[in-house]
Image (tube, rainbow, N blue to C red):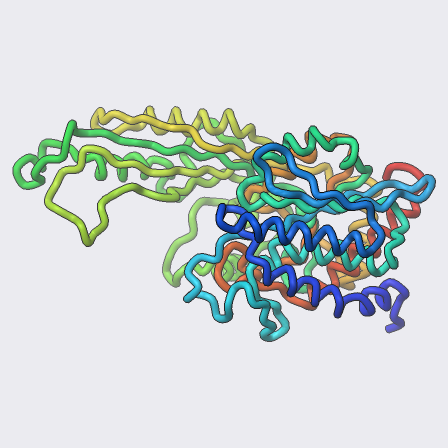
Length: 449
């Protein structure tokens, strides 16, 4: 096979880009940890310098209460569109270090994968964008705005204010959000739908105070048992969500084999899967409900007591097309309506994140699919994401005329947010090449794609 100019350019820059990625992984930029604020700032500074060295106009920007974000701009040649390339430089906490095979902030290669916190989510996104700029020697064929935020892993709480404050600097014809994953190793994908999110804390109160379980049990209810019964009403016997009023989207046309899903989700042998419909439909197009946490006595501290109060945090994921605030109201109404035995139920509403569904047609999507096809040597697929990335809906709302492409270098084995997070280096190289090809194809347009 004859190597193209784009392939040669990417091969030339990849070794240095990998060194950059490893340097970024070594910085423990955990945005959820206030003690790591200096490291979050250090990652922003390092990212800014990377693009400044390539000739960009670079600023580190903040809004009140927000984390530092990097904005780097390469002006558009006359008549060419502008492309916004997004990534984030903050990372998740590591959890128990004992669960990691190698230290989480010491990048380590094993079997073709680079292990380390942030290696895939989402410092790989920064490295992808840098690779594309370096492949063009700092002179991309379109205008490029690189936007790297520092608070995605805590829900991008000030992003809406940031988009409003710096709207003009961020405006683009095409927006590439590099914070997703491919369908499998060797199978490129565009993420076209994401589920939304709503959560709450429910408190059940059955007694004024705790009493002896032997003396009063059998007639007096306890709050913990009542809470368990209430939480059980979130699903029907087949595991479908039983909250009235939640939306369901059109089933996706993707074959997601059950055995593959069971392996990737680490479902134990003999454990049944929840819900009905295809796997892709259940995790991308239907709602889900999860009990995230329960406040209850530890087994080690248990006593023979009927407990007066118990609390749980409940989260629902919402199908594309649903409304997060309306869905949260449906969850609250369900919990209040299903209080067992007349127990008092109080619900404190929590966060929401809107679902997202793209109109995955038009010149920008055609260019992306062609770029993926050339880089991977096979047709890309359109996939959904069962999780929620609230900032994508915010970008779509702030820039309704822009084509939004959701991409990434991760894969189902990357273990983002978990121990032994990793990046498949072969997939990373193909993702970098695809972005270089995408910019070239978008440059063929003389106006907004």
